Image 1 (tube, rainbow, N blue to C red):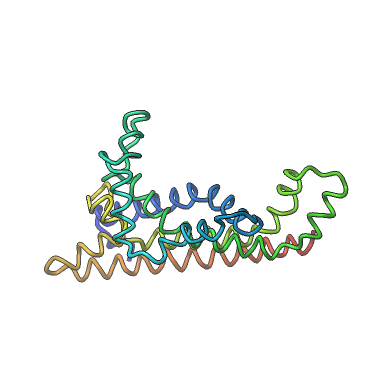
Image 2 (cartoon, rainbow, N blue to C red):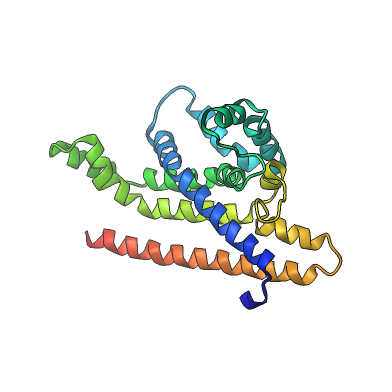
Length: 232
């Protein structure tokens, strides 16, 4: 199957993996922080923050992509500032595709980590605190290791969502071969041309294989982490 891919199709596969990886890694620090704030925080506006975080799951992806275009486009307030100050451009670049995928996958990442944080036995953290451990050290040595399965699950969900994202990406960065054409965009392109069914089927099979490989890898890693935590 992989041998039958054309150079353009290989480019779409490589770009999808690159965009999904960067989207996941870029979302991770903010995702962990947001999950802990939502799980442990007690403050006014917590419900509003939770709603904003999960808004991409409710809005049509095209709407999310258009909002990103308004904000991060060359004429948008954030996009114009980033370009002038740092030379960073998101619109119609692969970095914009990564940003769109990160926004769409962020709610799944946060939700998985939040559930894992809420499942942590607070007595273990309190015991470490009573022994004189600094709160930051308690977080790094007790809380964070116990939430690793949730963090891993959230990363896989975010990665899988990024691999399959289409609406927000094509609205924000268009469908430019070699620059922003990810697997879903390439499949869509094949379905719009005569005789493109074979190419669409090839890329669909590749998407299924990559998604299944990611899920199986996450299950294996989660089991290993779970066994290490049980032994400790």
